[in-house]
Image (cartoon, rainbow, N blue to C red):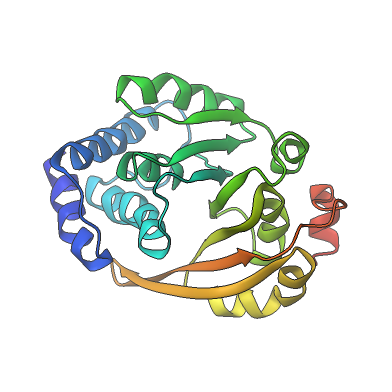
Length: 233
């Protein structure tokens, strides 16, 4: 726990983020819970406390350095073990976070563990494209990490975002290459590039691509996932 806390505290100033001791403790408690649960469930390949702090917690918090989520509604599409959504919920308490994932056992674990740590987030089990009819254009922000290349990811996330909101796409060193590849998707889905925020975490480049929702996403999107993969926008 101390190693995780130390790595977390050392990395926060580089992101320009200030947290209370209570928030830092809660982030570390969640990180520890992920490591423990990983012994019985495949949640992450990263299990060293220092690396959990850097590559899960700090990476997730980079979203807060790219956008002001205070009092906003946020959906984490394909949340997996809860990244970036759970750290966002901890660090930005006024944000109303929804965690969406297709794997029921992951979501069930999140539903069980979060209340024990005093973390508030809605948990939904569904594929992104199946959840859109219920949640279309209801969120200020949609974010996602390690789910798909950007041209597919935007079709999965943009339909959830209301006009005036934004998609916060978390990417690595190939962020600009993927953005170039996704130009058609950006236009068709009602998005416009606002900025790319770059961060160095553990010596590697991490980026948050901020794409503003400037018009409604056409109702035919998202398509079935197989179709997205076969014919990306």
